[in-house]
Structure formats: structure tokens, C-alpha cells
Length: 293
Image: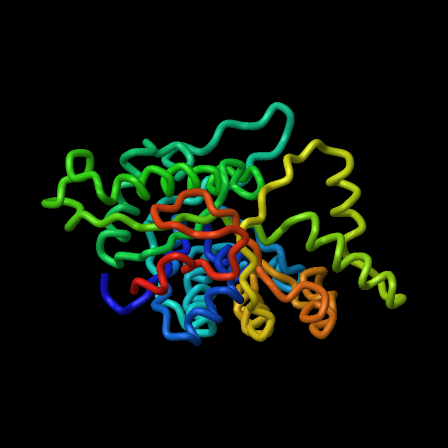
């Protein structure tokens, strides 16, 4: 093991890296950690969610190129490296019954074969820590669920030279820890919601909490709380760089920064796999690794 700590964040679409764990990444970059975002798809089937840009024909016709430029800007803001796996966005099917997924999309790829592309990135970058999504994808987008699947296979497969020969995939390597992003959790949402109401302010989380109460949702185990409030502005700036996907006047930015820092100064993760000894709860993704690096 070298002295360099390395973190890989595996995400489904451009913009996911800025809405899930961005402040954590910016914090680690500031400490000298080498951080790489791996983006599975180009976001080609993503809708234009910013009402100010809806109806823009150029964006509609060149959404792939536009989202790539947005990713480049967000990457620079966060100070991270970034690689594309090159898969095609599956879109989010809607309706009852749900329509079939489009042919050739990421979610329909063979899991082991698609994981091989991530194995190449892992063996090349050699991260001690990987972050990804849980088995529900964080929310049930087919690309998020597929990202989970290939991340789990690649975590083990990066060291498996029979399944992924070194001649094709590079020298074998075993990451040490894998985490699920759990930033959108009930404790955080409730804490910010009540903090706003207690101060006589409007909360954007009322509908979120109502939906949580209407549907059965298994609460995840939050094992790791990374203090990163000093990097919330960088997180927001990176998210706003994805202009097609975020309204800068929308609910994402309704909670005053000073309240966020005071009430919830961390980003949360669930430790899913660890090959090193660690004590839970943690405040560092590199707990159990840092002292030996």
C-alpha cells in the first residue's frame, strides 16, 4: 500500500456525484486524497428538469454533449478526477404497466460483463474505498440499481484473475471498503424540517416526510457520518453546474446554509463491505485504513 489514499465514487448519471456525497469528496480532496468519480452512463435520456431551460431545442437535441460539459464543470469545482464507463442511460420508465426498458440500455447489460468495465477502472486507480448505491439504488431508478449490481461484482472481481484476466483487465487489486451513499435519510430530513419550522421558516421537506409515512421504507443503518459542513457551498456550486438537472431556485437550496451547518453538518454512509477492522460508528471513510497507509 502506498502513502496515497484513494477514493472512488461510482455513480449512475452525471449530476449524481454532486447530489450524493459531494461535500465528502471535496473534503477529502482538500486533505490530499485522490478522488475519482466513475459515471456509468451519459445521462442521454434524462429530462430537462430546470424549468428555465425547458423548451430549449439545442439542449433537447444535444443533451448528451450538454450533460458532458456540465460534468466537466462540476468535476473542476469538486477537484476530482472523472471517468465514463460509456453505457447508455436507461431512462426512468413511467406508467402502469411500466413500459419495457429501451434496447441497449445500461440496465439491460449483462451484469458480469458490465462489471468488467468497472473492474478496469478499479485496477487502474486502485482505490482503498469505493462508494456506490444500495440494492434499491437509493431510489428505484433502473440505472441506480444496475450501478449497485456492477459495483458489488467489481469489488470482488477486481481481485479475481480467473473471472477477469489480468491480460484484459489489468493487474489484480482488492479494494478494502465499500459504502452505500445514504445522504437522503429520515433523521437528516426530519432534523432539518423541524429546525426550519421552529424558526418560523417554510420547509421543503413536508411532502418528503408525508411520502415516507405513506409507503413502507426500510430504514438503513447509518454507520458513518463524515463531517463536511465546510464544503457545502462547493457541493451546491457543483450541483448548480448541472444546469439542465437542477433549478437554482428550487427546493434543493431552500435551507439556509447556516441552518444546514448547525443542524446537520455531516454526510451519511452505510458500510457494506470491509476487509479491515473498524469500530462503528465511524466519522471517516478511511477508518481502519488511514493508520496503515
